[in-house]
Length: 214
Image 1 (cartoon, rainbow, N blue to C red):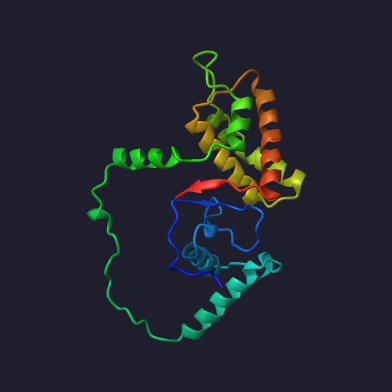
Image 2: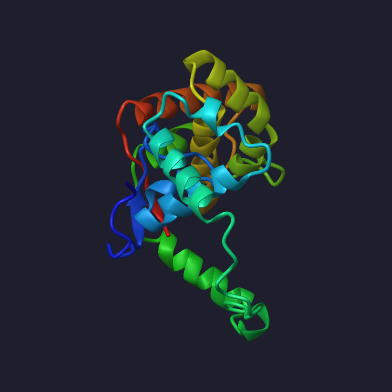
């Protein structure tokens, strides 16, 4: 149902935002990264208190995965747990990695991020140069307008809020990585950002696949 857990874990994966074979839980279409993540995300959606997954995923192929989890859990819900110890897995006090090491590793991963449509459109809309000291960063503008942009584009394209939100999240991350700044009038920048978000969301829904690092 989910695919082999023995499949090699990837350093990055291609997300298909328009796919309904996977549930939506964590960001960046994380369920699509690996069969194990697919199962974990499906279980999380099933486990969520008061989850309305039967209605939300009724017409999705992912519904069969949720039904399988329901059947599995119904079969074991009355059994006593086989593991009784409270052993912690990867306890935080054993983690000696510093913040500097964490961010160096994160930057190294993002250096391999494929430059694609999002980067091209961001660099057309925003500038790598600051017009003056108070020029707003592109990522700051996108974050400030996040709710309005996501709602407007989701309504315009009749697309789930989740998918639009994830596309905007990618744009914010890339604008930070590219150190981009707002060019010209802020009102025009917001208008153009909405157009860009709508275009990329539409293309992703039609089959474009963003590459996401793990």
